[in-house]
Image (cartoon, rainbow, N blue to C red):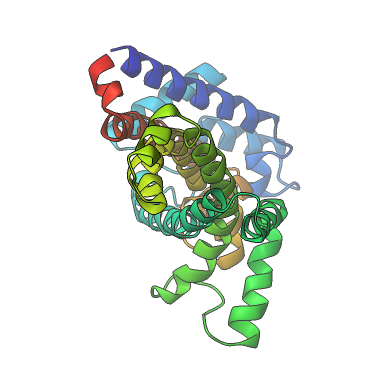
Length: 303
């Protein structure tokens, strides 16, 4: 019940904040629909027709009512389409992109972090952490076009943009997953080095267990707890942070839908999209808590 109340509170807070911010953004949706040269009478009539003359609390109530009844439509006439089908079409693309980016990040970060922790103080450790530092520092909006120039235009290995096949997924997944991989590699190394100082690791080594077995079987499982926290947070951030990457690669996901709605001042679509992002983030947090119990039996005993 506490989690349910906090989830509803977070969703309501996100809805209120985004509604307030929308009204602070320069520009008027009426100007988008009629143009700045329209007569004041026509502007006021259209404002009443689309409900923009109502106070913000009334607009929020109408939005919530239409959302739960499935009748929520875009804010802009004359073609007011339903919002939920558009979100249903875009959400799988963002989910696939986030999962692909997470797979890229984990597949790169775990080997690098394990190697750096196992060979602490050597040239391999220094090289891995230097590469991770560079990966964290490089901005995604620069890495994306760079990968396009290299892998798509110069080498002609991958398509530049779109979403026609799995090949279109590679470049945006590498762009999103690369920076996360660099961060996770540093986290993996730090978590493993902390665990390797524990007494039970010393006992395991004293029993004659090999270094690889101690690292994989005993140290890694305990080190997964802080990594799960980071993965949960970062996966939620990937869902919302893919906006720029989707724009660069013309990926038809939630980020592209949100940007188009902001450009058109389509308030209903913006509110609904932000709510979906919030719900996905909260769901990922709940799944992260469940993963704690699988990774550490002590969590199950406390529960």
